[in-house]
Image (cartoon, rainbow, N blue to C red; front, side, top):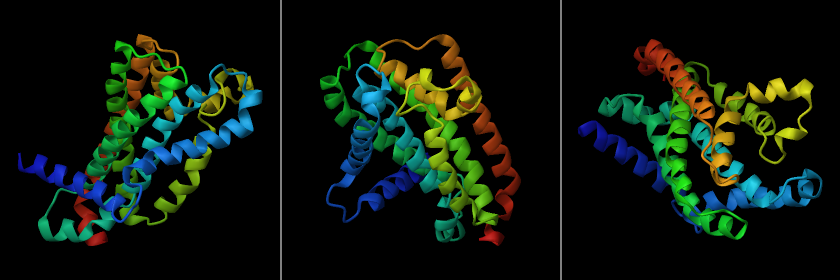
Amino acid sequence: MQNINRIYALSKRNVILRYKNSFAGFLWGFIKPLLYLLIFIVIFKENSGIENYVLYVTSGLIFWFFFSNSTSQSVSSIISSSGLLKALNIPAFFFPLSEVLGELFNLFLTFMVFLILMNWAGLVYDFRLLLIIPCALLFSIFIYGLNLLLSSINVFFRDVGIIWGTIQPALFFLTPIAYPEKNIKADYRTFIENNPIYFFIKLGRGIFYYSEAPPLSLWISCTIIAFSMFLIGQFVFNRLKNQFISAI
């Protein structure tokens, strides 16, 4: 119970600090995807060939920014919390975990705001929207595993955060968010389909955009990817955690 309270306190702290002295507060989580959406409408909509382009893009952007924000904030979470780690003997995994939980809270707040606009854009309200909960949880497990990996290595190699910030834009354009999958040439499809983010975006888009229960095969793929990443991250973290204090 004490550990749960600590994780809750850290997650709450992260959310509060993120929006401290911010006029718009959590609405920035809504404004940022909206700005991207407006840019994509201007640049890509006419040539996209996608029916209901606004809903298509929005269903991808919401999940992308959940991923992007969580990993960007978590990569340096252990280093930035070194004082707490040394003084209170808090388990190091609390810090990347609290970043994911804080961003997961923001994700569901963003859902509430976007559900209103997405209904105007053609979203169908029915019970299948509840599938977004297990979808978000699977994505969270994947992100947490990746965060464990990145934040652990970053303790010893401080360039990891810079490298990750460089890689993210490439991952964004290698994920079918602003363009349809059918527009991807066969020669490049392998790169897209080997991008793990692609599967989670596809899962969320099936629920939001296509108003359907995604196929079982896609759920299985996302589950395998999520727990594989978690196990990899956990393995690396466990191998390095005893050296964190001396390296910070």
